[in-house]
Length: 130
Image (tube, rainbow, N blue to C red; front, side):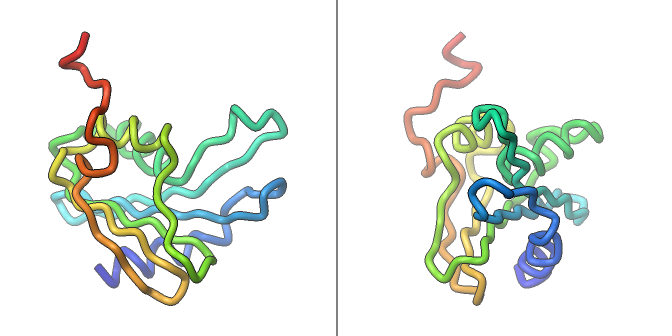
C-alpha cells in the first residue's frame, strides 16, 4: 500500500483546488499492478468540479479498464485527519469498482483507515435497480 500512498502524494500538487484550497489525490491499483492516479479539479461552477476518486476511475475506464480490473483505491489529502469520499464519489465507486475492492483513506502523515467499497454506500442505486 505504500506505493499507492507515494503515487497519490506525488500527484497531490497537481490538484486544481483554487476555490477550496482542499487538495485531494487518489491512486487506483488495477489487478495487473498498474496504478492510475487522479486529483480533484475544481470549477467556478462548483457543481462541475470533479473529485480525485472519479478522476482516477474515469481515467481507468477511458483506457479500457473495467470494474473487474480494479483491486483497490487509496485517497489522501494534505490534512492530518482522515477524510472519506463524498456521496457522488461513493455512488460512482459502487458502480465502477468491485464491491470487495479495498478503499484506503489516508492522512498526509500516513494514518490509514481501510474499508470495502460496498461499506461506503450500503444502499447504493446500481444497475440491478434498473
